[in-house]
Image (cartoon, rainbow, N blue to C red; front, side, top):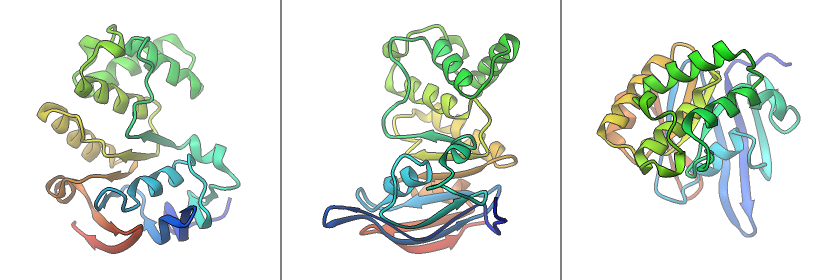
Length: 223
């Protein structure tokens, strides 16, 4: 693994969909323990950038390194380091919250029943859903389901969190839970999230990148 001066580095990163750019020539450096916000209108390239970083979409051109790993050649190593929240939930509606979280922990290699039980309880309590763990996810409101999907993303203590519009669908209590968690998680993780809410972005972020027409047009420091 090569030594990187930044936790995440992209160079001339582009993604084309036919004749249209989803992301164009994006250069970005994100430091360790940083909360980094992506802002811009729908279709600006925020989701495309996050999906490339999450190894869910392959770029058309350019380079990406995470912890020095080339995500095009070492995607398995990268996936072990990240937690992801997308626009659509990755939970199974027919399973309970507890069953979903146990399933994802096992995917990441956790097997000890006591560790599984404690981690699920502790993470669920961070988002106020510990009393809904045995409800089937499909019966939950959109806000509670979003909380469980965020818990799923953090259940394995990822080094990097990639969150696409994580505050959408959350009620005020859920928003506060998430803001508090991100400020706390910054001590051991790096967070990149997209949002349309400038107030939230400026409240919790260290830097904000603005995207327009699939390009990064500005990066500004907040803290």
